[in-house]
Each structure stands twice: as C-alpha cells, then as structure tokens.
Image 1 (cartoon, rainbow, N blue to C red):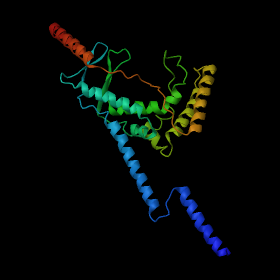
Image 2 (image 1 turned 90 degrees about the vertical axis):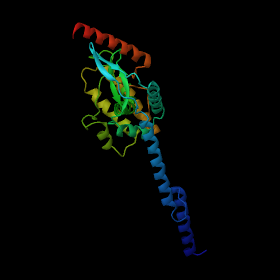
Image 3 (image 1 turned 180 degrees about the vertical axis):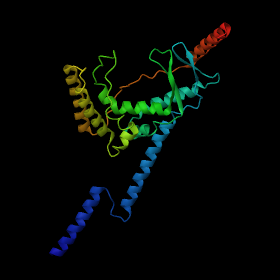
Image 4 (image 1 turned 135 degrees about the horizontal axis):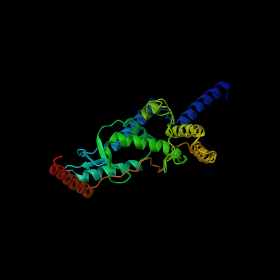
Length: 272
C-alpha cells in the first residue's frame, strides 16, 4: 500500500473515530438532528418543572387575617374547599421529592409568583404567619436547597437561644437570589453550593462572638461537604429546613371561626 493510500485511510479512520467519540452519526444532518432532539428534551424537562411549581397555586381565596390579641388569625370562608388545600399539600410534598438542579432553577425564577398557596401557622401553632404565595414557598425552598448543606453545620448564635448564626453569603448584596444566580448562570448547583460553603467559612472566621472551638468545628464539617461536592460533582440535597411549615386544617379553621364570631359579638355588646 503506497503512502498516499495509507494517508487517506488514516484520515477516514480519524473521522470515524471522532464521530464515535462525539456520539455523532456519519450521515449528513445527523449532528443537527441530535442537537434538535436535545433542545426538545430540554424544553420538555423545563415544562415538567413549570407544571410542578404551577401545581402549588391554590384555587381557593386566601382567608381574611383578623387581629386577635397580639397576633392574627385566619377567617376562612364557609365554602372553602379543603380538598383543594390537600391537593396543594400533596403538590408541596411532590416538589420536595423531585429535587434536582432544574427544579431549583425554576424555584428561583418563580420567587415572585403572587398566586396564593397556603396559610402558615407560627411555631406556637396559634397565630398565623400570613397567607403565603407560591413565590414565598419557592423562595424559602430555593434557599434551603442551596444553603442547607452549609447551614446545618453553622454554630448556634449566643445572642439568640436555639437559633443558628445568620449569614448572608453575599446574596442580599447582589440584590436577592435571582440576581445572585444570574451572575453565576454558567455554574451548576453543586458549584454554587461550593461557593456558599467557602463564603460561610470566611464569614464565620470574622465573627468575634463565635468561639474558636465552635469556628473550627463548623469549618471542618463544611470543608468535608466541599470535598464531597468536588468528588461527586452533583448537588447535595439535605432535609434542613430554615422554617417549619405548619398549616391550618378544616376542624381548626372551624374552631377559629367560632372564636372570632364569639369575640365579635362580645365587642358589639360592649359597644366597641
């Protein structure tokens, strides 16, 4: 075989090898077809994420919040659909089960969604924290999924009994999580978690109220998480929750209605 033929065969071999390594067919138009399929799959995946978040919208009207003593209590309308409330609770549970990078990004995008979702109770399970929107739930869950890997290891705040220290990580300075994320749009969620962990280590070291022992303990645990993230190269989702989510139920709402009605009658009787 002459040099020219060997050279031609080598070129063909290189082309075939490159095609196999790239996963492309040698047929004309095949690379573009694969790109189109990938784009279509991306669109379908995004649609699935959108639908999961859309399901958080409650079709009920949010209850009226009535001042009662030192707090607020929800006055649900008599025809409030509690089955719809249960559907929304199921949607929230499903969202937690479907945790992934794409869904996290959708939560960040939807953090300003104004649709009513559910009404939260305070930690004493008496007064209402407020009528929470879809966006409020998206915001708190996006924070937990991003920050949980780090915040679960933060030292307790000596000035706030039972609470961990509060860090900003530069998110507020950036103008909020959506803007902070947009500035790092090319990074995967696990890379953002690494950034958060590294920033936490720096911030904790600057806090004089945290003892050296507590600072070292937190730093070692957070450094361990960074090492894991770099090794597995994917986001770690923890069960950490910055806010317990407690909801009102039908019987409870009926009792509150009777209480508010009794209180209203008492005020009318007293001429107030």
